[in-house]
Image 1 (cartoon, rainbow, N blue to C red):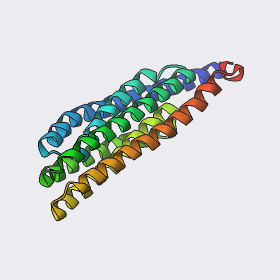
Image 2 (image 1 turned 60 degrees about the vertical axis):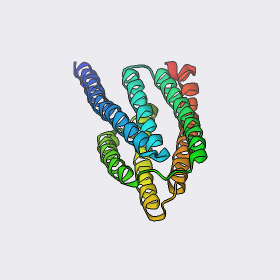
Image 3 (image 1 turned 90 degrees about the horizontal axis):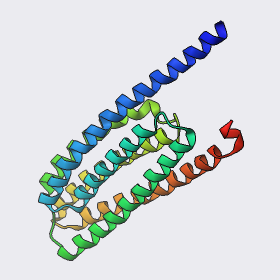
Image 4 (image 1 turned 180 degrees about the vertical axis):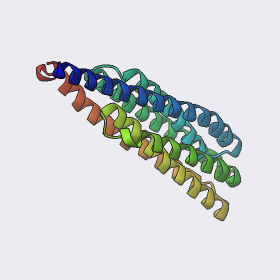
Length: 213
């Protein structure tokens, strides 16, 4: 009887934790969708490659969180597959940012630093909230770990946008914006490789007979 109660208690604890993760992921999903619309519009108006790159990252994260939500109550192999999907999507975002940078190089017009500062700061606050919400789940599994890494990269990118805005204001040059946008692209690519490697290991391990048992 005690073993049965213990097993039920563990299962209930697991279900409660999954429900808590789901609530957190829904919250950060909503934050990122709203911030994508706001920041992309501001980046387009300001003519900032860094701000637009950061907003595209927000859109990517919204998809990442959506996939993570769907993977919560799935098998370990399915969650590892979700991490592989996220890694591939982040890789595509990095390539997209590089294309955007090439476009900005042809214009040579400095972006509006004031708009960059305001909306870069707003995005930083939003991502710090997301990071705080995800902090305790960062080592739960490869799916949640990759989700946490996405938010951590966002905070780094937000700080970079603020640095770029200060550089544009100081030198009246588009190069600080272009340099930071390039750095964001590199962060995308490194993160994608790390997530793909980790997800690939988990995917292979989950397919072994021991894991199936």
